[in-house]
Length: 145
Ligand code: CMP
Image (cartoon, rainbow, N blue to C red; front, side, top):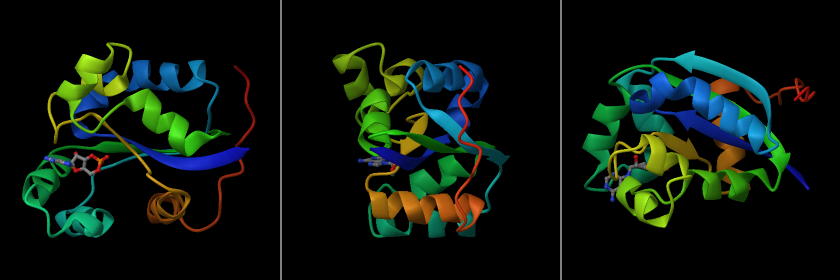
């Protein structure tokens, strides 16, 4: 079943954009829309609103405004869970223990600087795709690879 999810290449992994896009296509996803943007503090706080009471929230916000990010609308079968399994666990050190192929193992550093984001549910995916791209879905779902 075809799904959509929102991936983010975080500021610490921007230099690895090429390798990450290659991995996305190697895993059979299509990129419907993609956007490089530097968000304001308020925009990041809104995007991660569900975490605002967590102790790591200030670290997360500071990290996410430290440079540009790339938001990607991914389309593919079982995209939400499959993308999360390709990036690995939130903590990059845990990802490194689980396997060097995991994207957070390859490009992340710790629990905050973890290179990539993936929506955790269909509800989150819809909200997060709308945040970056508007409520209309991307129609660029053709796949040439
Ligand atoms: P992400 O998957 O984008 O969702 C929330 C982000 O908060 C997460 O990746 C990390 O960057 C950060 N985060 C989550 N849990 C922790 C934690 N325990 N300590 C520090 N940062 C965290």
